[in-house]
Length: 399
Ligand SMILES: Cc1ncc(COP(=O)(O)O)c(C=O)c1O
Image (cartoon, rainbow, N blue to C red; front, side, top):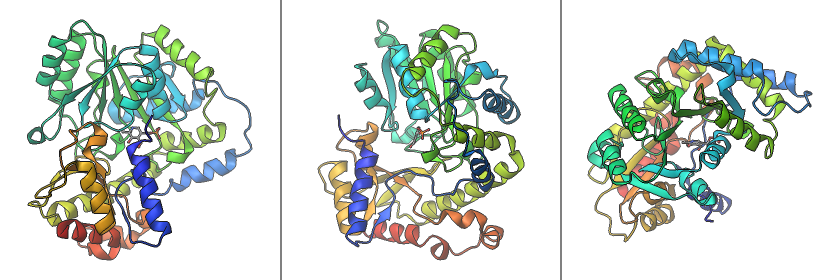
């Protein structure tokens, strides 16, 4: 197995930093923001909790998640259909393992889904998308593929907002894809780990339109900047108790339970809506400020960006470069300018395409607590607050 492309780029970045070379870390997609203070306080209080918990996760946490989904997305969930796990990565893997189906992915898709299927010896099929369609899977393309492959059973992973493009589906597209999935008995794994960072529109979910065949994944890694806490959850279809039991059995024989103090502290993420909403809004304000800077300042004749609708990534295409592959281009970019991005081929795009994911996370995340800056964010001088990003844009334009 290869090391994941994002981790490989992270290693190259670290190597540069250790040599004292200037580096602009737009490769690895870790949240730049600190964990909300209220969660940190709760974690301190919970540090002495030492017992194993149930594999499914604390009931009080699952109840809060269900209440949160009712208030934010108007979904009626029961705590029973929620499983808490040590990362959505793990939960996605266990679901793929239990479903035992071919994996179907739109290209580009996040780097981990395909290697997970390969570890399980499940075939992987890619559906290419088009730049002119903002790299989105369309229901027409999905149906065309399924029509030609009626002999196989598929699990389709959708990511909303998407990593690497930051794009979201419209409600119409979600409904259309849901209808096709239903027609061809496709299971959907809807990775909504960036859902709280949807910029203009409210976070929607395909679960609403296909509840009997959709599994939803979410957690604290991005939304609460807590990737290292390893707290995530999945929502299973309500009536498929046999499948849920299999996932729980797999969890019980591997990770046993999600870290107990983290689970107790995580309750606050769903319960303390005033503090957490303010935190989320501040993160979004900053991400949107960066988005508009990139939009206005990247020279689109050289670096064309697909405008993200959420999350902290954008997908870019380089024009006028001579490299044989996108990967070679990204390595040359890193060596010549110090700017690290991940080639599109890591996300399933053709090797020759000069595309890449740009993660706009090289910034001081404590800005979310800078009230002065937040009050004047619209007019704040970008380079003063985001020097690394401003310099990275200059270097990209000059490359
Ligand atoms: C699209 C996507 N899904 C899932 C994850 C992993 O989340 P977790 O930390 O919950 O395993 C990431 C992390 O980079 C991601 O980008």
